[in-house]
Length: 552
Image 1 (spheres, helix red, strand yellow):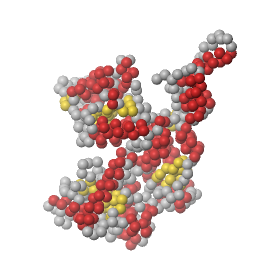
Image 2 (cartoon, one colour; image 1 turned 90 degrees about the vertical axis):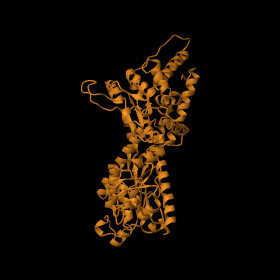
Image 3 (cartoon, one colour; image 1 turned 180 degrees about the vertical axis):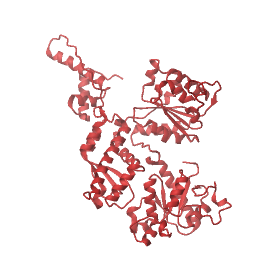
Image 4 (cartoon, one colour; image 1 turned 60 degrees about the horizontal axis):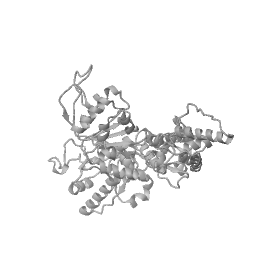
């Protein structure tokens, strides 16, 4: 978001834009004009009709011109010719009276993430069209200019603050676990410093999302966010990608910036930094020490100022000890202040919150939002597209469409180990609701689906959910274990069979412990066929009884 938030006024008249231009000059305004503005100091201001949008079609024009609009101020009543109204089934008088609600629904389909302030009172709208209303806020203007401007300004700031803090705004959900609370504090403490940041965590925990949606905005840097996945490019070209090339540096090389220069003044995110070759590590170390980079094939360094954020799921300390990662670069990456993103299985209580946020983002825009809108139209649900997820039971009055995961599915989610972490959860909920929605849409189009309030509930079949959990990352998803290549046991002579059996049991537990990375729940699944807390406790107790100890 820019330093000065940008507003778009959508009103058939001039009242609201005149009020805003007169009293709210701390904001920028989206116009349909080529001139830079501001409008109130423009020589062509007198009689200009390009200051704002007068209908839905002009709103689309302004939003296409200004992709950075932060808030829309939308009137409700539009007294314009019929050809300038969006179509609806209402009589012409009512279409005009509530055209703003139709425009709101139109905006939600195109830009579900865009905050909208409706310029009316909630009571007035609720009498006839509350069901269709999904504005972020309402404002009732009293007719006294300075009072109205103050009320509107405070309301805009409230919407902006809430949108910045909401999971949908940045696409990152913190949840309620202690580990995530600590991570949040540490991220904001380190983001504004000049120090590099090292993000550690398993694949799919959300390291790249954390870097882009949280760290970069928190740095308050003006430059861009630039990311490179070092695991996806050949080791031989990593240096040229990072530092750039001069024409003729090697066959086919052209004068080209590297990612460091592209990120100058902003944030550079290096994902899977453990994949860098030792030579590229040397060049990276020099760049961090000197604040300069030299393109391959050149001798003159160029100054760069970047906030470096590196991430990996590898054990960098181990790579230092085995010689595949430079100790001086590891020290420069500030390992003492490393940030660990916990795996999802350690914050399983956050799953319901994550499911809801992932679902809302999925249906905020794009083809899935269009699919949701098509279902709601076919089922006769008269409201703007909105999706929510509920666990265990259906809600009484969902806002739009409620996808319900039954109690059996909830139990499966609680038992699931989520080796793919948040990425796996996103894949699960996306597939589950889209498959269920597609089936519901087909039934509705054939006239066999539910109608009215019943159509707002879309159950997700338990069998579908179980299959998705099982197949999300292949056969290892539910067990989170490496398939053993085969076990061998040493049988030594003993005084009795009891001692022989104990020896074999010790060997079995040792091998299971190694195969499952010390996860007693997974060991319980292998031994007892279930991995609940009680089973895991029993296995650990027997582990201790056998004289075995957890090694860290």
